[in-house]
Image 1: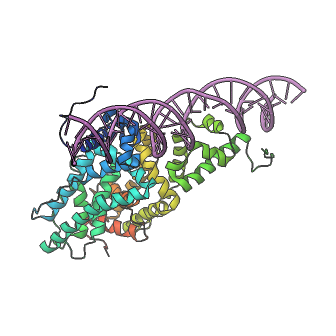
Image 2 (image 1 turned 180 degrees about the horizontal axis):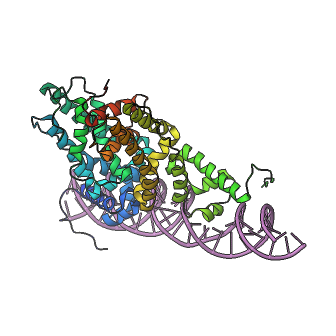
Length: 203
Length: 203
DNA sequence: GCTTTGCGCTACGCGCCGTAGCGTTCAACG
DNA sequence: CGTTGAACGCTACGGCGCGTAGCGCAAAGC
């Protein structure tokens, strides 16, 4: 158990420890899922004492949430593509790709149960992840209405749920793979209901 | 402490024990969710020794799954209403109502994580719950095509995911309530994409 | 009645969570 | 430099829940 010399990677001792813990958590989360994550395991891989973890995060769930939210928040805002369908497809596709990763897919599946168990955690997740996505849908819908692609009375909330619900349904319940064309098919299944007279493009 | 007399409710001793355990599991599942379920708790409430439970089910998860599948399988096949939209709404609505129950909602949320953790359990769930629903959607779509309400090339798989995805998304991630009009709004958001020329009825 | 089968009970071993106390290292500052 | 306070490592717990073992006892079946 030699002690590391000071030239580590950089940053203060505190931030180095912090990063080591978060990295180890990410790795173990990817390997074992939320289920298999143990504080002891994180401590061992990070080369850190268990107590050091508990000095920063009050519980295992809090640690896991911090990492999870951080992962999900890496969020690409959709640029103006001058076509509402293209923008929606791009948006859904980014989610499909992220969740299609073994890492995020597994993590997300495990997360849901923790959301059910811990209302505090559920609130944080809704505020920082779901709300962000809802806001982005609002933006896209707004643009679409101005462009004349979408009906002015388009239900933004429903649009959001119709776009992402099926993706998560696959991930968590049906078990069907998140293949490439999925985003496109989902968007085309929703668009006609919200598109203005000009029935834009399905197939 | 106090042995029950033989006049119980009926059935052999074995089946009485069995029912007591399943009932206790159902109750605790409703009160505490899959997370909070403990074999010790079930044993205590059922008035049964822990070992008696392990003699019938090999693990806690196996016990929980038996109860869960049994609960979800209570399934109403949709009668012919002579209108495809009405039938789809009725179908989705039955799911909304069941999941809207505190009991099933909580249980379902907790179940998802176990599905991720236990592939065996996930397989059983898909085969006995998801597959049943897929088959029912197929039936409805078939009827709808014959009636001329739906396009002959309607994607049954996608239809199924578009109908139930949003419901589960609310239940598990967005946290929005499963209110009454939901089924109708979801169906109307999907129908135009699959409806034949006669753009049946949205609002 | 007597056997067989099932049950209750106690007692474990294990893994993991989260906490306490104490000695040691690090890093900033005089 | 040398000192000092904060952060860290380590060991040792208490608690809970899973799943198992072995024994004595009750209930069905013959």
